[in-house]
Length: 440
Image (cartoon, rainbow, N blue to C red; front, side, top):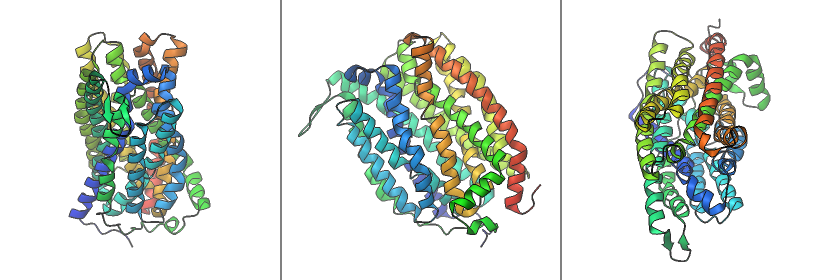
């Protein structure tokens, strides 16, 4: 059956709200590590590069590789239950990170966080695509995706305040566990409430899978998916690489943003956390919603490549700000420049996700989304923060040149992403036309 042209139901918007809360929580648990660079490096005797492996690579290792088989499950099983299980797993893993006593134990806990979070986005994108007509999908995914930046903002604010206060108190005594270091206690405090969100997820109704009428909707085996991707290879390749490089730029900057203000500008941890947190929540959250609204506006005007155009515009506006922000000597001006960095880095992420739902047959959506997330997260989460650390440690060989490393990676990744998305416009129009039944 095909979806009638009706307005989304109240339960559809409730679904958006619960999924957004889950996404917010995932980034809170994922990014809280950014405010712990100093205490963890001190307690575990780590270099910037070793810390970056905990922040990115450990999380991305299983998050990326398990995403595809979990997404295949999402295309054929109950998605709300799958997401609820994932939330419970990553929340417990975050809390268990608070018991880590060495690098290996913390690395293993971060891997487990990635395993749980791999269940969320492919299934969430698929659920939203079945709840909303094409004309409203950009807005719905934009709201859902705002959870990224609200979660990052809260992780900076909560992390900065918690770590600073717990450092001043000399840690936290927990009966049966002894005295936990500031970063250990923080992991436990932010991890355990996620179990309540897992229960909330079960209040959603599993949406009926809505077909586009395309023949590929009826085939879910891997050979059919590979055949579809090969047929539209240029469309998917330029999409994955363009937005993957955006993710690399974003993580290269934001994984080290609090430490940048602490190390380069001499600010306190709580100062950096609260200010960056508010900027991420306000400008990042509004940017990603604006990206979705702009995509919907272009779609209503009949533009088949609407999400790709929105993504291209966002990255083109982002790149100069991302290059300049780390290089500014004045602290207030540097902080002000992070406002457009967060706004324009978030602007393309909603369009990136909605684009795939528009050009991918029904029972491939979660799996193709997982391939996209595989590329984006391997480049972004897995390598973004580490790229900055590697350039700092092995190119400039000076921790006090962290800002030069951030700016250099922003330049290379941003300019290359612009080229990739410009090349994606024509093949995307053809692919979207095919799904709609009028190729060309």
